[in-house]
Image 1 (cartoon, rainbow, N blue to C red):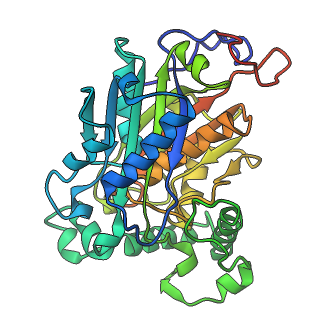
Image 2: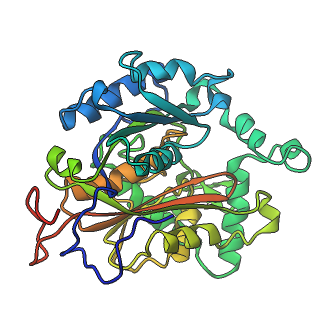
Length: 381
């Protein structure tokens, strides 16, 4: 699916239609190793913050969707208490996905396309600290052939990285450079968990392997956290924020579940999703959900991102990885590049499943004036 405008329109002259949808506000709790708040309390905080940014009340919301995982919480229907984050009154149509909050945002986007409501909230939350990820993650694998092996994500990522290196598509030094850059960027982001860690590439390369060829710096932290975004349909978006982050393309694709049946050095689903979302031409910043350094290389190559595209200036999943919220955080960070930093075109990406099995791409644009400067509030509607 795509919301791209006709090819003959430019971003400078685009007139926003009633069916166009924008992100107008985002909120995120800092990723931490152990969060004492419940998931409901975390979601209350991010929903309150996001709504306050644009002066909305819960009674203004027409639909909400949350992404979380019962396996993490250790109980069936554990998402039900999280409904309290939106409140029992007034009644709000709601939904839930057993996926990252990025897929909750996708459902909210589709719901807004129906045209009978104007505002929706998408949320993602998770507390990895309550369980053992190495024991939990194998449960998502094929129950007959893979799950009995106890394959954890780190082992799968190491197999993927080894194939990538032996194919000549990357080197261990490049992976260390990605880790170092992510840590440098995270140093200025209070929402990231890994801050002030070693950033010297040679010192990172001197560390021992955790899973050959991956070192600890190639892996994400175990994080708790939550994120929320407010989506608004049509001209109402311009009334709530000076420069909305318009979703001009949104698509997600899946590949065969068994990692042994696909090329782990490539991500066809990411490439197709990127093309269906309108392509990457003109993208200035890309927030990629790459929990492992080698996966950033695969995503960058599969999308065909230019060398001058800024990758994960937030620090990315390598420095903060709240399960079931990490992908939504990437999209929120890409939106903030437009809402706050004045960028014109950005990209947010989320992944799910073993070794980049499922991938979602969201392309965002900010309106610009005739001279290419950010348009003033209300222009080009």
